Length: 309
Image (cartoon, rainbow, N blue to C red):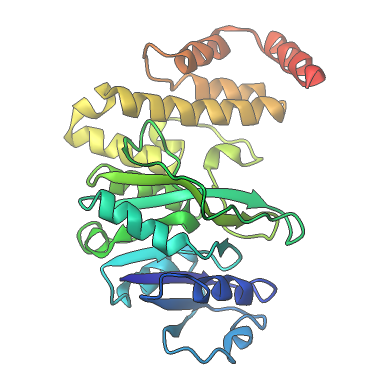
């Protein structure tokens, strides 16, 4: 039922635990497609003694995580494609929870469970599988809670929309937005996926969060996901009249503003704020304030807030 795509690049310390977490699933109808994206360490050798016919390793020259996932999806034999990065892990009920989401909302094109971050094996605590779950259909633009290693898509999404772009940052968010514009999304609030931090892996790598300054000349230059929406609006101007999409864009802008204020780059924060889309929301009000308030006042308010934490 599930084709599991794992892009692999220099994860020798983690890849075996990642694959073992898949092999330990209580739902057994799956295949594992590991795409070795030109690893230069011993990542692949860590998998050599696994004698399970469901595991397939495909090699490619290093092209990046988007290309690796696309290669994996092209090899998928099952109806649903689940994603897992080479340093993250699943609880044993992850696939069975995804299966339950599909059974509840069979028309969904994208599904996801909830997830939790951890820094090392000593601080991870797997959630109790017996805890009640809440499965629901969502408006992705109101709840952009999809995270790669907790997500699955129907294979026909890949066939119809293509794969991930070759953006260096934010290619995952762009794909979720592209999918959400075309297919229903359903989620479970049960935590079944675990994101390992501080490994040099793929994260929610938004252009807004980078620690360099550059001139932003248009809304499209903010991030790949927003660029996609801007391009779509040229075909359908009503997109930016959609309250959910307005909220999504303003939320992304506000996240960036908060990042830049924390880095004491008020000029960049104000640049982002000026692209906010008018709406009746607290986020838009805050963005308006950032645009209007003098830099020293913003800096003083940020320092005061930090001192109260």
